[in-house]
Length: 70
Image (cartoon, rainbow, N blue to C red):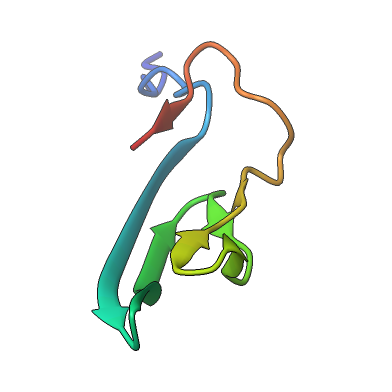
């Protein structure tokens, strides 16, 4: 009897986040945000006038061994 050999399960999350910024009206603005996996950003905010700030979110909560976030 032959059993099926399955590849080992991959542990952890794999995610990629690509953020693009540019200058407009004297401040840095988010031009595009693309993500794969469980990474995302909230709407930009500007507590320092021209400097763009973002919250980077990892909704699964925390980072653990095996996570690959780039």
